[in-house]
Amino acid sequence: MPYWLPNHEPPKAGSCDRHPLKNSVAGSWLTGQTCRVGMLDAAALRVADGETVELRPSGSSMVPLIRSRQLVMIAPVDPAKLEVGDIVLARVAGTVYLHLVSAVDHAGKRVRISNNRGRVNGWTSHDRVFGICVAVDDVPRPGAGGKTAAADGEGRQVGLR
Image 1 (spheres, rainbow, N blue to C red):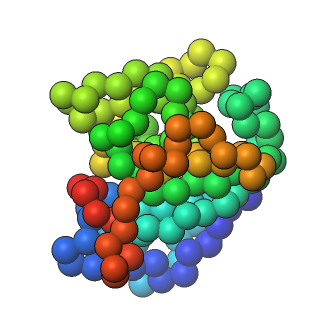
Image 2: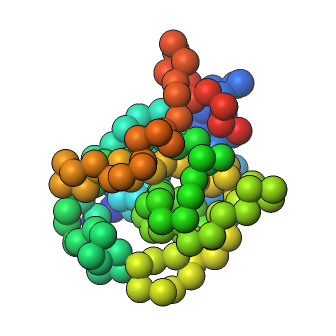
């Protein structure tokens, strides 16, 4: 089901450059218009702005870790702390996925994203990893809590580029 984001504005000057809709339409910001985005795109926008979100994604690519329509909580992440097996909200080749980190390249500041059925989505840079799954149906994901990004007093993410 699509989500509508009326008059969505780009991030303020000086804030992080991780905005999920940057350069998504004709190389410009989506401003002054209503834009249609999917549920994961909308969640990525909110998480990139520092919010923790809850959603019920559909599909079977992450079974048994996440079943279709289970309640998932996603928090902003410090990508430098990611490890294989973490479930992240990330953009790979133009598509936002809630999938597994299947490999980490710390030197290159990138991670490989895959589903739980063996399909590799591809490599993506740290600036395209927006959040980490911290709970499924209110059950905390082991190890995820220490990887969330800290926010400063004004709600901006600290240490994210």
